[in-house]
Structure formats: C-alpha cells, structure tokens
Amino acid sequence: MPVVSNTSPIWNLATIERLHLLHEQFPDIRIPEDVWNELQVMRDCPEVSRIQQARDAQWIKVEPLKNFHVRQSLMLELDRGEAAAIELGVSQVLMDEADGRAVAKAMGLRPTGVLGILLRAKFEGKIPSVSDEMSRLRNEAGFFIAESLFRYVQREAGELL
Image (spheres, rainbow, N blue to C red):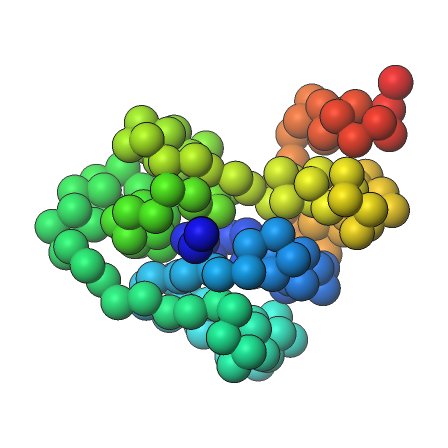
C-alpha cells in the first residue's frame, strides 16, 4: 500500500542519513510534484543527492497534482507541500507538522511522522537508540522536538524509565 509524504520527513531523514528507514517501512512512497520541487531548492546539499538516489531506485515516486481546487482549499490552513500530500488522497501520510497532521486526521487519513518512523525502527531492531537519532535530528537537521515529546518517545522506546 502506498504512503504519501510531504517534505519534512524525507528531508530530515535524509539529513541524518536514515532515509533507508522509510523504504524499509514503506516500500512505495509517493510525493506530490510540489514536494519534489521543495526538495530540489537546495541542489548542492547532500540530502538532495540522497533523495535523488531514492527516486532513481523508484521507491520514491513523484505524483502529479490531481485536484487543484482541493489543494487550494487546503492551502488556506497548510503550506503547499502539506496540502499537496493530503490532496493525493492516500490513506497514510508522512507528515510532522501539527496542523497538517490534524487536517489529515480530520479527513480520515493516518498521519505518521519522523519520530514514529524512528520508534518503529527501534522496535524492529534497525537502530540501536531512538534517543541518539532524535538528538541528531535536533542538532543536524534543526528539527524541533519539545522536551516533553522527546521524553515520551524515549519512554515508549524503553530508553527512559
């Protein structure tokens, strides 16, 4: 079953060199053209070449816009990439932003974010420490994780009592 992603999960996992975790958990990843364009903005960054490799291997596929009017309506509340990801109408979406996740849930979709991907990878034995990966997200990707959420994920992973 395909999953649709907006920019954040792909970029942040590519930054910490964990993009392969997406492929292991979701072999068929779709991204809207708007997300692809957002990912191409910083062409000289190593993240772009990692993402391009995934596209060349065809486990990230770029999808054309299906319903311009739906996306335009969603953009009243969301950014372009989030709106485009939701507009594709696939039941599972990869998205980190709270507003986008709330809209996705309201539309009957199942959102998952980077932290959920890392937590699942920890349970599957793909990474030794979710704490280390979250620290890398903070330090290398500039990804904001509230301290209470950081501790919650650590507890869920069995890394904090």
